[in-house]
Image 1 (tube, rainbow, N blue to C red):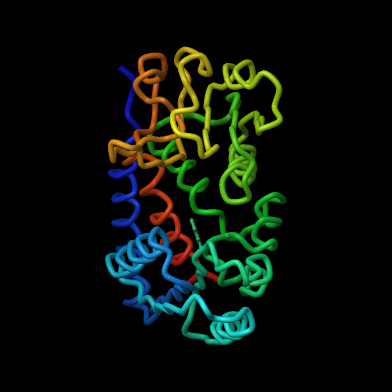
Image 2 (image 1 turned 30 degrees about the horizontal axis):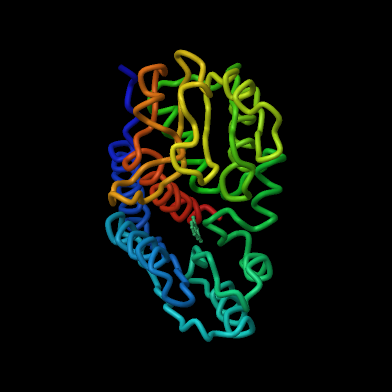
Length: 279
Ligand code: GUN
């Protein structure tokens, strides 16, 4: 039986540690505030934003919620971001994605002060990450590093294969695994003979957005498998990008869906908010 990497437990531990750090900061007179902006009423976004607000409340960070109508113009949003950049009492700014089509996401992300970019999406944050400077790390890949470390899984010297090259997961994951001295390969839709590459992995991170895509023939015996995907199936059950039942008997450790990577994203966002006190 594979070891189940428990994201629910690890994220709860991290949030409890952060709660103590926030209390210690408060005792010294430093309070933390996260501004969360949502434009429109995308259902999934509303759930994520609600969970982010709850996490803030739990660890003792104040959240400022901006729920703007879908008709908000790019200028109006940019002007709000500018105002929040200038506010001394706001430590972090998060603009929930996706934004309505008439708003240029890149332009909005670029407008956020990199010192308040707790999502780690600003090009300056991305650049800092790649050249090893201090800055905010993208939350989902940072959460995966914590899952590995807190489960006692060594990264240094390991063959790490990432399936998916998105800006939010695949690319920053590569930077973080490299920083931990892994040997990193990034695969994507144009990779030839994907299984021959994924089978090399000691640590396989899957973020391709296709339900149950990775089956046993893609994994090496004894590998560690991290599943970033989450999908609602016709029977209403959740599944990941990995066919868990097929893969689990062959691996040494695996993240479940739900309860694996998912809960880590918000824990790491909170970690970035607490780190913003240092900026
Ligand atoms: N939409 C889906 N995931 C995320 C995230 O981590 N941050 C933001 N801002 N938007 C998202």
